[in-house]
Image (cartoon, rainbow, N blue to C red; front, side):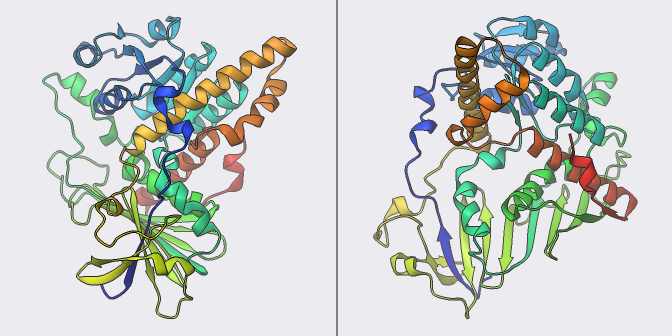
Length: 430
């Protein structure tokens, strides 16, 4: 990479009007699950005007009290039934343990709430399919899967470029997630400690590829507009051996795609070097994504791209590279604004923003349908809501979440069995 010319690809336009969260009519939200992920969601909602948090729920008193301190105006519930019965709550964000998702999704949709369910959707293929079926049967509710990278603007900017063959012929992709952490949580209560460490329980855990890796693997499937046809995996407990865990802390997987392309994925809790990124390789160039920035590395025999004349020259890994700003006029070489991404929020922020905005769109469309045609039936409302597709903010739906979950679960199975597993089309029919 150090020997290649680097061109930075960045979405440069100002965010569109749909992203003006302050102007979006608010959808009142309730949060179920106030552990570490739930509190991250809570902090994000605190700066998102379109999604005011009006209720929080956790059965563990300490977690509930901590959440209420962070959101003092929100009502507190120690059981999901109480939050779901709250008329103030229009939308529910489910951030509990993965194996608890299905009954909560079912109850929330039955209560008429919009639902954001963290990814993976479930710890089994059967539960993931059941959640997708429930979402399909409740078209009045906006269901969003927590594949937050599908709402991230930089990746949406790159999507048509990659699908249109901007890299040349597709060769392969490589993704990694490296972070040194034990994944174990501690508690003075032995029963509670067992409960919060469900990720280390082989009977409940989707493993590293399910809980962490599925986001990047899903981006590759999404960009290629293909589902993997097979996966092979390997994994071991290499660093955190002393606590007796059986869930590997270091894993590798190779996904095969129709047409011959491959994805190589590495996830570890034992080393933090080189962080996390995605790289897409083609015959003309490669693209690397890190956070909300992306660079192109051209092959020497690649054709000239017209907008290279507007490039800014940067140092990249010790070499002089050409930084390209897409859809922009010529920029001064030292202009500071040219160095930063125009999108400064986290992928979680954009995902929750999309959830609130799209929930409002669905709510309004259903109200208009009922006012014009009466209650109607589910197919008629679903057809009416299908017209909203172009006006929604980008987000992962239930089918997207189901596919990513099933693929990740099979990848985890491949890691545990050290076998090649074929991924069958019939698993994804709902």
